[in-house]
Length: 403
Image (tube, rainbow, N blue to C red; front, side):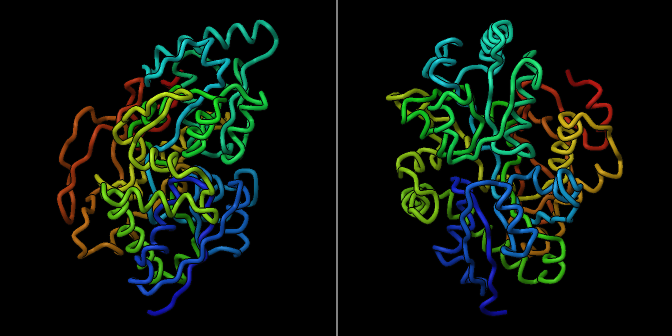
């Protein structure tokens, strides 16, 4: 296999790092691949390019791959996810006005305490006939589901007590500056850019809502996976090598230099570097604070497509689309994630390969060893902020217990 080409769509976000670095640093070439990167500004365009064959694969928000497969908002086209590009890496940012109303400080506070202050502000705005409005990057995004999960858990009813609208990541800071939204939930570097521009204060990292929550994935049409299986496995190996390099401390500066370039993020290098090194500037002019694993790219088999993570996203789709649970849809959603392809690609490489394809989500307080068919696997805390755990084999009971 030589010279095989993959056209990969992406949005200008730090978690597009792995395909960019696989291309720029030779990891793709080492696998006999050429990557052409195609930059877009909205997730809808990334999806449409993929569906109509303008790209072969995409950096994509995980729930959108599931929604596309299930035919939400458009005719169904099955997608496959053989690789996770990252966990977490997003934040909830308040406008400067809302930050003052809720008493945000220059520290990452407790989600419940911040939530209580936000509920008070939200109730006051509803009483005044001008509900708070938050922007998320797509209806079918982890940003939307993480934000809604937190709001519901602190007693704020999404779509009743607060409005949630869609804003493209590169324009999120502009929406805050224009007063179109009171808050955003978006990926880096766009929270940091809002802070550096003086139009926002970061309230929470989404890792505080769900530690180790699935975020971006490599998605492709199922037919492409079937027709190009050997090449897809080579792409998985290239991305895995890029991920291992990306987390090396001495690689951060070079990675930031590459990602900040105009053809990729077209963003300030310092904001990109802060995200890569888990440092977040919460308030304008403040010193960055270190939040370990703010963005999680490699350790603990972070790139493994756990079907239980897809199942949790489906549970939130049921919840927030106000639709009935379907066992068939739940199975189809889980099967979008393809751990079988991941294992086949990395067999014999020494990379830890989980023995299971699904697990209890949110059940770990402390690091624990996990069964693997290859390598040693240690899984860290994956708690939800409210202490709930998600059993992918009993989604209906889980949904019945949610507020």
